[in-house]
Length: 207
Image 1 (cartoon, rainbow, N blue to C red):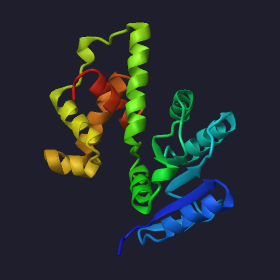
Image 2 (cartoon, one colour; image 1 turned 135 degrees about the vertical axis):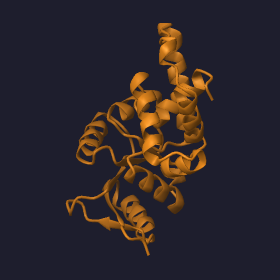
Image 3 (cartoon, rainbow, N blue to C red; image 1 turned 135 degrees about the horizontal axis):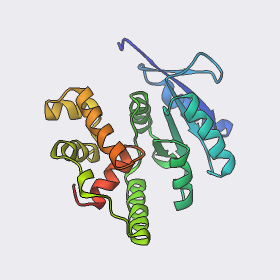
Image 4 (cartoon, rainbow, N blue to C red; image 1 turned 90 degrees about the vertical axis):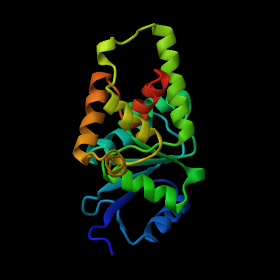
């Protein structure tokens, strides 16, 4: 039995979608679903059918109140919607069509650790968006800001889907070291989250 259950609160969605998602989460012994407005949860799961301006406002407020520990469940995101979701501070996204118990739990557990989790096809689109920005602006960042070999090693494992604990074990680092390496490269290159960092590393040919 887990020593600590992750408290999850579900926001939005029609009654059927909400009930289905809650039912999936309640099957896990390491999670506890809290009523909206109950004691502060560890993670919020937001269901948004369409991500428009109203949804972005709700997401931004939720991200602030939950200290970024938010999982967005939605059908799809256009290029402009991807930008709005990132600007709102959302770091974890699950497509509704892929919202199995295993996928949802992974996203919730990742968010609870303060980390991000996005679908691979969304990561590909983020990469394309970065390439487009680079092509239009022609701006290259200074060579001095290039990732170190240790940072590249961590980014490569992030791209493989490993979480902080798994990366630490694979590289024989402490979890604090892994977080520190990621933080340093993201600050230097002004990267928003792990998905953005991986997209940058792929675009620049580091991984």
